[in-house]
Image 1 (tube, one colour):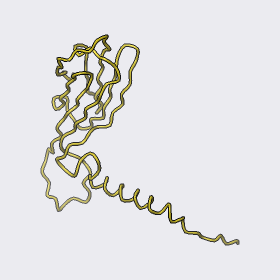
Image 2 (tube, rainbow, N blue to C red):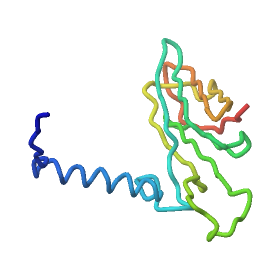
Image 3 (cartoon, rainbow, N blue to C red):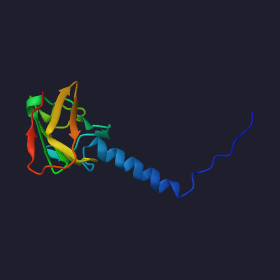
Length: 149
């Protein structure tokens, strides 16, 4: 049997490890960049891409119903907003872990191309909001709300 000498990691890597652990702990408690605890505003994760004739935005909206989503577009900027409310009140002392977030989801996204604000549609299915915006030659600046189907 051979022995392998154990070496402590270099001092320069340890602060980064400690910072990673600290960020993980903050995230577990809901204290990262999307808000400081419950009832705060945070943004959903999104994918934004364009095809030859449209811009597509997909956003994760788990647990959100279509009548809770508010979408608007103005000057090639899409705003997604939803309110996630707690359905039941439970005694805090009985919780072992509490990671579900409640509060306002909000995200404002500049779109990568000029779009026709009258040619925007949205659907919400299986926790994914999908917005399709047709490209336009000239952007219109009036703005409008989009109904979620």
